[in-house]
Length: 206
Image (cartoon, rainbow, N blue to C red; front, side, top):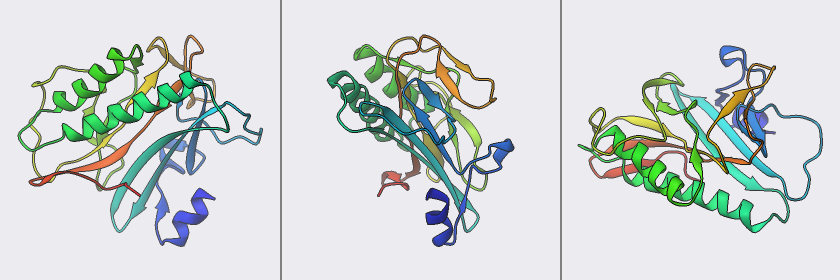
C-alpha cells in the first residue's frame, strides 16, 4: 500500500533497494527499534508498531517515521509513545539558525532521560537532500552548544529512537532488523526539517 501510494504521486519509495533493503516500508514491532521487515503475521491488540518511510521526488529525498499503538494498549506504552514524540518536537524547536547540532541532540536526550527512558546510540539522524543520507550525522544524545553551527538552508532528518529500558541494541541475522538487547519496547519518530531564517520548517508534516 505504501509503495502504491507514493508511486501514484509520481514519486519513488526511497528505501526499496537502498543498500539492498528489500521493502519500501520499514515496519518495526514492539522490541524492534528500526529497519524491521513487513511480515505477514497479524498484529495483535496491545502491540507497538513503528513505521519508517522515505520518498524520492524531483531530485530530493524525504524521510519520516511514526510509532502507533495497535488497538488498546497499556498506559506505559502510551507514555513511551508520547515521550518519544515530544522529544522530537523539542528537537525540532532547537533546529535554529546559529544554533549548534548539539542543541538538537541534547534536547532529545534531556527529555527522554528525564522521563526514565534511554536514547539509542547505534543509530542516528542525518542530513538529507539529493541523497537519502548526507552529512552531518544527528545523534539523539549530546551536549548543547557543541558541534557544527546550524545554517539557513540545512535540511536534517531528526529521528529520536527511544528504548523503554537499556539503550543497547543488536541487529538480527537478516542484517537489517535492530532490536533491543533486553527485549524492552522501543519507539521511533522522525521528521525531515529545514532550517530557515524564519525558524525550523517541518517538510514531512501531514
